[in-house]
Length: 244
Image (cartoon, rainbow, N blue to C red; front, side, top):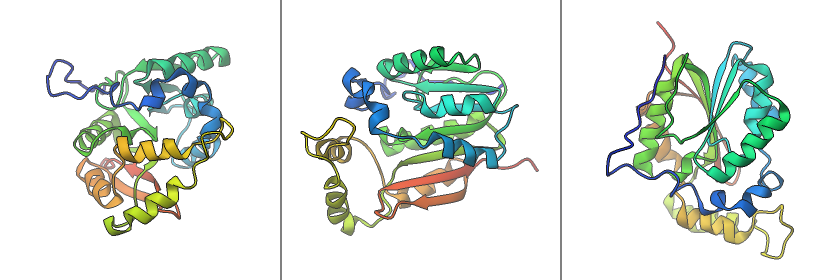
């Protein structure tokens, strides 16, 4: 059994719900989340299938949101644990799991720092646009805990807003990204400029050259790293040490 132990009673422990992002606790945002964010779940599941995802696999989806990835992965594997800190996201997720009639998807209210894994170690941990809610100190702990629930040779698939540029470029790069946001009067399926500005101002995306040493220090090898052309998004395939 692999188990994560959370320091629930410690006064210095961060409140994961409080840093979950204003929009992820907003029922109106959650109701239109799938229209605003396509998780490319089929492509992500296909990638993991190429890395060994199969009928015996255990998958933990941290920051599962409305469950786009969890629902796509469930038919291919033995067990999916869909984890999120937002009660609003979890309500939408539970409804989707019930509607799909999936009996191998467990829904858990927790986050990177509070999830306690029970049962056989995970073969895959998946996380998309969730780690950035934590400041860097907590990212290091989160990555270490993710490594701890994986079997030897297990994979963390991580995608997030991670800045692949130097600080001197930040003003131009961030302004160009925010300029891609729609006006407030645009259709509700768009991300607005104000939302992108809020992400940069109030959340905790970091630089690739800070995150990647943290990833390695947390016990992962970086097998693959892909960066968006604008230097805003990074996607990783990370692996714990294989058994000797």
